[in-house]
Length: 639
Image (tube, rainbow, N blue to C red; front, side):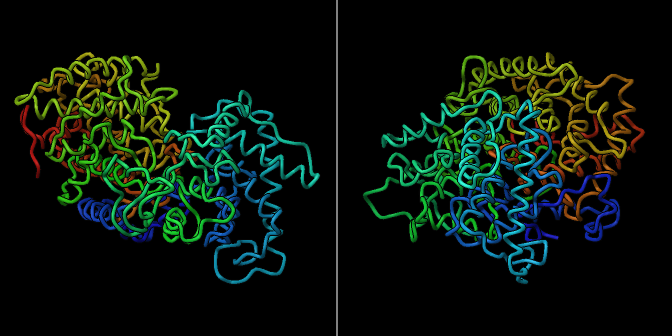
């Protein structure tokens, strides 16, 4: 199975690790232990070049926005069918808890809008519109849409009485009030039912300010463009919005390096761009085009290119070229997975070294997360670049994701620590790295202060504490010095305490992704670490003697579980969306890289001495990490 066998933006059916052996996808896997990590890594790296826009799961939120705003765009019936197919039994959409609010508001509003337009019959088998090209019975499509909308409204009304502690998703404070008002407009027009109330603590004050800004014609800050659709009618043709030109179509060249996401293109003057995005978001682009759809325009071509990849449903953000490449290559390289990285890929990471930093997608603001991971990957690949562009994000206490960020992210600061620490290690003998090593000391202390009492971390860019804990614990292990030993030891013990009975780890249920993060942390956290000054310290154990046996057993059990719930090339056999955007999403290449790294580390450690030899896990795994591949202090090698 190759990357081409994976859906580009369709909804992946999640199969918990413990249930994987009973799933039909099990037939695609080789015998236990037969995951070919090297072949999987080769395919993964080749896929980064073959599909430079990246692989991201479809979003019920974003797809709902296109159903509502862009019925003129190809693939409309398939988008409606996607919403009907992905509705949960309880009437909601998306993941558990408060994460369901945004996708459910969007999908419900979209279906109500479709009914007001006079929902046509949809392609599909009876009861499952959009699944095939067999026509549904007359009237069935409209009945399905109406039923799904009613169930969505019922779920929203139930949640209004008890939904608390909403997740920190981008623009949720704008999206929820905007969609609530739109749903209430549909209900009022139909004379149907009591209006919904926005979530507690949310109102339309910020929305009103944004709409006034757009109406004034003033330039719109880039950080607002990704959720431009919340502005409603005032977004259409707004003079202050400058779409960002891009190179190529759906399978073509990656976005321009300039400005780490492309230079803005004004509405007038010069030749029009062949293709252009608004905030790297299909919904934002559709909102700017307005009801007429802008036939033949650069932004319309962007939307058509996105839809071409899936036939209908869309992700929240595309392209994600630098973001995907940086994370994928750094997960592989940190774990020491043997793979040759083409020079073209290495060169593309140079976008992270531009002044001011890099953006995750065209039209998004530059951010320290994409920048730091790209720089870290370059250093691991033997091409270190000075991370000077990251100073623009320093706040005095920590590093912000982007200028004007509300809140703070431990994983962003862990990635900055990785970038600073790895650069200092590679260049410590030939350049003055004192500013970077001093910042590493401050960052390490800041991260330790944000560790939870149980030893884990939480973050605003991922739903799972296992991702946040892996990022923070491994950065502290590598670059946090001896002062961080206790924090890393606490993280290891938290992982040992939270492993599930089937050997997996997971927030809501065991997943291949979260199991991979846990295994990588357990396997690398005991390896010899470097101090924040870039010199190699002696080996120190992150778990006491009483934990060594538990750690060995946990790794063996987790490895058996993980290899049973992935394909022969390491792809999860169904995976939930856990990464934060306007809606949760699943970045397939990045997660597969984490899985392949975990399998590689675990297999090598266990085969070297068996699960009963704690020293194999605490010290032997260190020979597999990129730290060992990097050579002595001050030198970086490129294999």
